[in-house]
Image 1 (cartoon, rainbow, N blue to C red):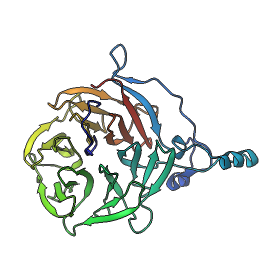
Image 2: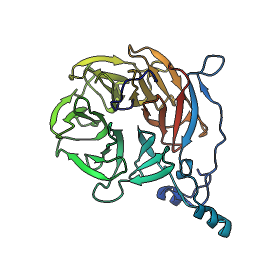
Image 3: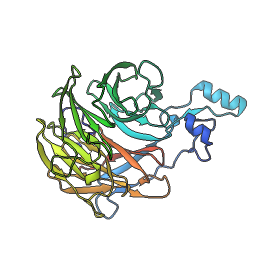
Image 4: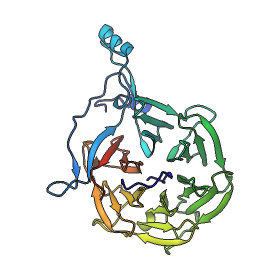
Length: 356
């Protein structure tokens, strides 16, 4: 699962015509169009399907049903209820059916509470205000960890968005971009992307319970254990740390003790290779899911690094399975996959038919 929360192991793996100002406010006064349900599966026929497209999340109306007052207002005035939604989503984390999405333009976390049938946001007010949220993860008890790239800190909230605490280290972070939590081993991992003129390309390791900085994994370079512009991170069920090494076009894996274990992928244009890898997730079975922004899809690899399947394609429309700028990804405890597209401002959800 994405930057994996530690669940018991299982076998399951714009509103058209929105004004620019409405986009920046994340609201519109007309009801967004509802997309027809389509039976889209991967791989396509005649192969046996392994994943089925379930839904897209964009607006509050995707999860929140109109109240009696909303219906009365529309009947009396003809005006539809205002709705909110995504403007520039970046990353996603899922906890007990709640889908938490960072929005780097609206400077908040947008929450689609599917089981609760509600929509809410947080990170807008002090304490705990966000200036540029990027990577996100959820702990097993529902604590939400968010990287604030501009403030160079980790902001921590409860499942309802109430601010709890921060982790800051003056001078340690250069360009923090993602976070992963391993509650079993009392670890928080923070990716520092660095930059062209910086040598701070690595992963900082903290004690989850105390916030103490324990070590830094990797350094800038092209060797097996090094990074060149690392981007996102996920922790597997065995504690292995999987890091998207963007500038080296691969995934680098360390074991739970911080030792280099393996690398996956290389630059190329064929399945199993990478052109612009970005988001990463790991499921309960240890399978690795990697988003490639250039390919417009995510690829699924076995625990041995074998390509099992790729899902999605690059496309000019926002229909299900089409992506222009896919970024973050997560896998929940049931094996459902949630993938963010920044350009189309959506989170697509896929349900496993059978495991790949």
